[in-house]
Image (cartoon, rainbow, N blue to C red; front, side):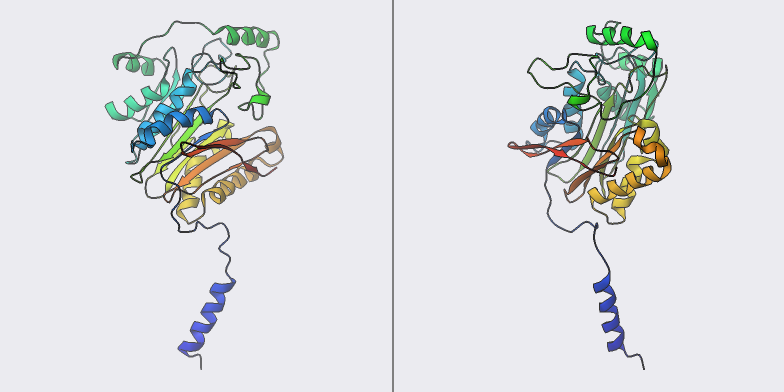
Length: 337
């Protein structure tokens, strides 16, 4: 006879043999905390932390943080970035708060802070995304300044070089300092290295999450090309019951597998942020097969407990983590291939 006692004994053996590797432990993680992609995240995190340490809202932190990178003269964020193949600099950005409110802009020209325009879309319109001329018209109606037309000195120089061959081949890990093309100064005025696309996610002292992402996209892209950064669920996703996720890398492939939302659903199932990012990258690797070696794709995530992690397809990705005045560190991500 299979008694209740025997059932409990067998059940306990079954539980003991079940692996919990990769599942998020229940513990008091870091709070507040902010993460951002690539090495320029160190500077961006500092601005975000100035908000968070004063018990500020995560939404304000992720906006203020990435505005630092938008202000810097670099190859792939802000108006000083590389143009598209027709010679125009077009900017994309997205933002999302703890209430599932979100806003984004794409193909925005001559506006200095696309992340702030994305927030205005979220707060002042019934829409999620505005693009092109309509996005610019909206920005002007909200008081943003129309900046002068034309390219930065570095971008113009690199564009002229590109026109000689007119090749379009996205590079791997261009976001980091050692892989920069001289589309803008190799170093900033403070001696730090230049940078690329930035995504940021934060958990504030009240336990609320928000995220942002801003970029000029791939240099010398086709006119009108949009990557994952302004697409909610691909480049960015926030669920205040679960966590926040942001992606960077080859936008087309991140879109194909709904990158940020895929990571979120893995976390919802109980996986840690790092393992959730890894599982999503593994899915991308399966989709791409042998062509995966030609691209880079990376994810970072925070869960509701303040645990964090990231994963990349290839070696070379890093992300910045800040949870105290003296704790703003750069983490080399794990990778698959």
